[in-house]
Image (cartoon, rainbow, N blue to C red; front, side, top):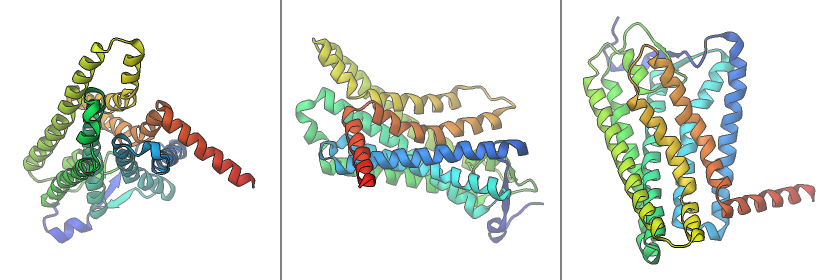
Amino acid sequence: MEINNESAIYKTKFRLLGLSSIPGYQMFIFWIFAFMYVSALTSNFFLILAISICSKLHTPMYFLLVNLSVANVCTISVSIPNMLQNILSQKRTISFSGCLIQVFLSLWALGTEILLLSIMAFDRYAAICQPLHYMVIMKKGICIGLATGAWIVGMASAAVNAGLLLRLSFCDSKDINHFFCELHPLWKLSCSDITLNETMSLAADVTFTVSGCIPILTSYLLILRTVIKIQSVKGKKKAFSTCSSHLLAVSVYFSTLMYIYAKPSSPKDEEEYKNIAIIYSVIIPVLNPMIYSLRNKEVKETLIKLLWRKKNFQQK
């Protein structure tokens, strides 16, 4: 039975199958992902707080890092709270409207994150290769404009791809083999022609991947060329230390994307996509603040001062 009219689409209920159908694993999954969600919220919050209160960290790089942390919080908040609620209530249903919102917010956060990482790569290029002109190239107005542009472009792309779901009709099966709503699992349930949806999604994927990869690769090639010319070992170490955190975060993020595009299709695609989704929607938001905190002396010092003040305040 096909659902054709728009009002019926909004009344459609889907069932999220989650990460496992084995009852004994449900509470184990709940506590693992609850811990990861709390860790992501806490670490990103402290990172944003540290950057906000420390005047030393009021630089373009850390302004962009605050935006990245906000995107990370959005990414993990799209899926995990709903998944945890479904486990506790033992109800896995989600409305079409709820699905649409999840798809939109997920695409928005992920698209924005890619653009922010590319802007941060350009920032590192300007800091290392153009140090005398850095504050002119990355002045406050330009930084705000670039970050705002990343959020607007990410939102526009997400709105188009999520909005195209409204033109689809859905058949009898309403089981989504995922722990939250994404485009590909929803397409598989559709009785409609999804050619336009796939084309627009591919266009967005290519646009974001190219606009992310090219600036990052170009920036780091120029950085490498500049670092090679530095005579002292201390100077080379200092140059690499300024971009090591960002390079590590980029490597984790883009290696996941490259795996999606490079791997051949197989019957186990649905399970693999779920595992990959855990990496970019859960693990990366947990890891990013740790990468930038543990590998950055100024951030570590600020966080230690924050925790020390909190401890002293509680003791009084």
